[in-house]
Amino acid sequence: MIIELSSFFNNPSLISWGPLNIQYYAVTWILSTYFMYLFLKTHAIPKELGLSTDQINDLVFLYGLIFGAMIGGRVGYMFLYGTDQLLNDPLSLFYIWQGGLSFHGGLAGVAISVFIFSKKFNISFFRLTDAVTLATPISLGLVRIGNFLNGELYGNPTSGNWGFIFPTDAFGLPRHPSQLYESFFEGIVLFMILFFINKNTKITGVVSAAFLIFYGTIRFFIEFYRQPDAHIGYVALEWLSMGQLLCLPMILAGLLLLTYFLRKA
Image (tube, rainbow, N blue to C red):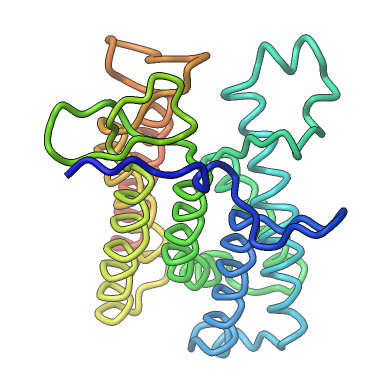
């Protein structure tokens, strides 16, 4: 079934009244952050670490969202995907309203921020990342729905009987809804995998390592259905995208960490 989406799927606004403009994409970010807050507030690991409600607030909204996802995601995007623009206009690093956030940059930013947080309050870094990574998939799934509503990051053209025609696609071709594939597999499926692992092991760091391995693997394969960034294209072998390239060290790091934690236990 080929579905032609209406012009609604082009950065739609939930509320647009005078200068007030609240977009659905922003709502998915708000919901994803709030979900992570509720998860960490009620989960056993933060309680085990003795985190107060105020500390969880700071961890999620200040360290995680602002310093990690937003700043890390923006810096990562500009250095990985917008190098030419950054060299021509260094101030474009701060033009966050123009869009452009990188998951891998955000991941690095969150890791650094959580490390600083763990040192500040003298708690186990990897025990804390176990809780954070366990809460991350559903948040990722919500943000990918925001990408779908924005008509961005859509998939490659499809010649089959399943696809969407996005109003933001200048070619008007039926395409894979790769945002929905990512929402399902990076969100629901990854959460179920990590939830199962967390239920069946008490070894610190295993959930964090599993997140790196399984997210990297899922993202690597879904990238085959996702349209690469037009200004970059494929970076190697005429099929390897930047997203896939960045997933390889992520998977390797997860395997090394998993081996280390299991041997240490």
